[in-house]
Amino acid sequence: MTDAALPRRPAGALLHRAWTRHRVWLASAAILAVLALVDPGQAGDSALFAAGSLARVAPYLLLSIAIAAWAGATGADNLIARAFTGAPLLMIGLAALAGGLSPFCSCGVIPLIAALLAMGVPLSAVMAFWLASPVMDPSMFFLTSGVLGVEFALAKTLAALGLGIYGGLVVHLLDRRGTLSAALRDGIGNGGCGGGKIRAPKPVVWRFWTDPGRRAKFGSEALKTSLFLAKWLLLAFVLESLMLAYIPAETVTATLGGTGLAPIAIATLVGVPAYLNGYAALPLVGGLIDQGMSPGAGLAFLVAGGVTSIPAAVAVWALVKPRVFALYIALSLTGAFAAGLAMTLAT
Image (cartoon, rainbow, N blue to C red; front, side, top):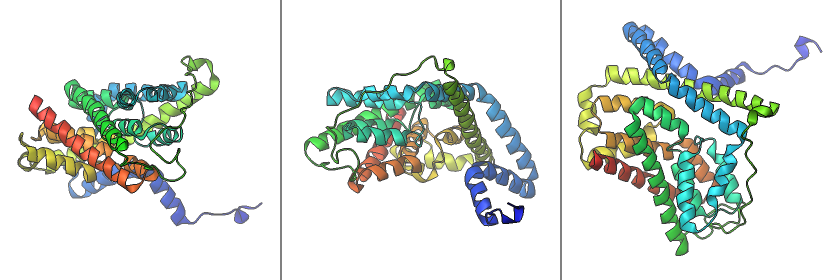
């Protein structure tokens, strides 16, 4: 077959595919390019700031990459299924703990949630896992420690566990009253709030390096996670540099500073549309705190934004009926506000 006979993709389709795959990298490059035209000095400052910030969090970044690659290579995600057996209240607590400790982002948790629902896991336990998982994981803990400090990372971990338990208990009580009967969409699980048989998880292969296939998976997971974290953190640090350069500290302090209820409530609501990504949000919140935002408001922003981010919300919408989706959003916002208030009162 000659070159002329080979099918060719339209240039527009190729550009769209390139943009879809590399839009985060391109966004960072575009921001720096525009800065180079309108404010050359700030372009250099932003590039240096981003490079220095990446170097500062590099040890935490490498550790988070290793954790994610290890989980994929060993099949450690199978351990999570063991958290969903036993009495309902115990199941909710273990599900929240599993969600807070699981090495999954809001995108990676979607197939696991679908599997849990299909396995007949009660909706109360699934909700506990669902609410806790996007807020914290081992990688996020180490990165949060590097960017915002260990104390803040511990507070965010407690917020994730508390949010999961709170949401699971509310769903459990509503389920007992029959309010959430037939809550799942048609074709998922048994169509109700649980009661199906939970399948036994497969064993974890801890010595994954003895298996060539698992070694290859470790390498591919490490590369994929490295690119994912690098692109989002680069964009976040570039945006943080602009925020520090162009947003007056007085404005931040007046809007989100202080210890009252208003800054926490505003941060909770602002976190929904303003949240970029769990990793990208960390340096942004760090910059806001440096400019006067209260740590409680920062925690509320991170919790609300993490749970209501587009990937996490889409997963809920796809698997449950609208009233459960509305409950998920309500639990997320009220739980985030409570977490921010608790941190404010404790500091």
